[in-house]
Image 1 (cartoon, helix red, strand yellow):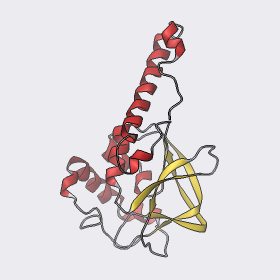
Image 2 (cartoon, one colour):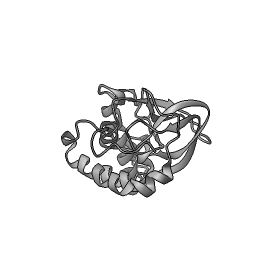
Image 3 (cartoon, one colour):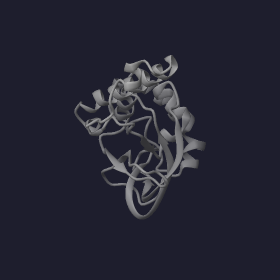
Image 4 (cartoon, helix red, strand yellow):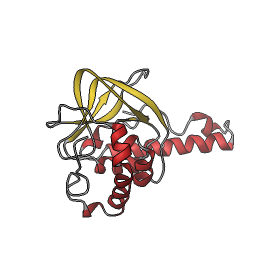
Length: 197
């Protein structure tokens, strides 16, 4: 349940500046969009609508991929997640997050995502991912992340190798997916698959 009151009482009483009220209005709009998406079915139904942030650890940590999918790069901050690892996946060039007691995964926390952006990112992820809450280091509140739910390789995904060998092509294919997702019925299929990092 969302406990923020909208519009803020200062806006009702006329005590905020035009810029402050406009900013508050924009924030309220974003909250309503996320809440609207959260009321849907599937993985996004778990979102609370209260400034939900997303921990990304694979291809979505690259600005080139985010720009092609969302048309912008959302605000982000570097983050680390302990107890998990970014695993290489069979026949895929992107990773999956799997539990690992001694694991540590570098990534970023994206914030300020709109409901439409959550919908795009969720559609971009395979069905084998589950949207779950995790606690990243140096953050007081949990964030969401996509966790891999089926078998993964014992090897870790190699971010630097992906960047050097696959990023440019992956960004181009991501842009094509964004224009016509139906033409990619199997995200792990031809074009997405590659050597296991």
